[in-house]
Image 1 (cartoon, rainbow over the protein chains, first blue to last red):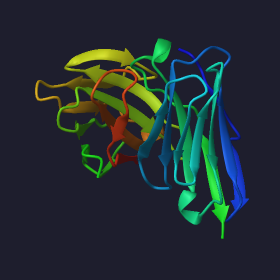
Image 2 (tube, rainbow over the protein chains, first blue to last red; image 1 turned 135 degrees about the vertical axis):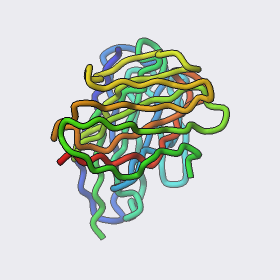
Image 3 (cartoon, rainbow over the protein chains, first blue to last red; image 1 turned 180 degrees about the horizontal axis):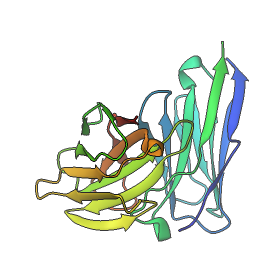
Image 4 (cartoon, helix red, strand yellow; image 1 turned 30 degrees about the vertical axis):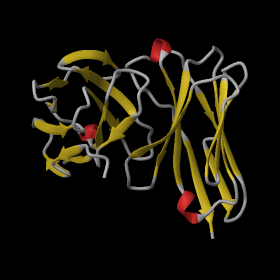
Amino acid sequence: GQQVMQIPQYQHVQEGEDFTTYCNSSTTLSNIQWYKQRPGGHPVFLIQLVKSGEVKKQKRLTFQFGEAKKNSSLHITATQTTDVGTYFCHNAGGTSYGKLTFGQGTILTVHP
Amino acid sequence: DSGVTQTPKHLITATGQRVTLRCSPRSGDLSVYWYQQSLDQGLQFLIQYYNGEERAKGNILERFSAQQFPDLHSELNLSSLELGDSALYFCASAAGSGSTEAFFGQGTRLTVV
């Protein structure tokens, strides 16, 4: 299937700082889903991006799909301790259809 | 609450044994996915069923098998257990197969001793 690489693998920030994680592919992606897993919890769906250049916002979270549909980003403004967790992207559709596979994700730590 | 129910929540068993993990999907969802998550590891996709049929296979060991029943609940069978099989096993359900959002259960923590 189409593999996506997520960077960085780890990110430590001070509370109040911004945070961005990137999901990159060498091939065109069908659509991108983002999930968050809190420590000790289960993954929770955040959003799906479908269109080239699409930008969606959820409070302090901004999700973007690249113009060429080869990358996506999740940006958190003014992080809070509740943002701690692992953020996964998933290439939904295309040759990944049905597999719902995830990369290693980005583990975010927020220091108060 | 995601609406996906996994039982049991915790399971401790000895090496060489066989266990069955159960997943009840959200009402109306036809897809069930199974994952293995070891300590500090990502989510390893094992297998997907859609409306009773196997739809996609990931890195599932031959010692593991799954099925989805007519009422759409699913079971993951793990046999000849090894210490390395200790992990958190998640199931997720989705309305469709592929690009629809998935809802995860709370997981079953399996400890093999």
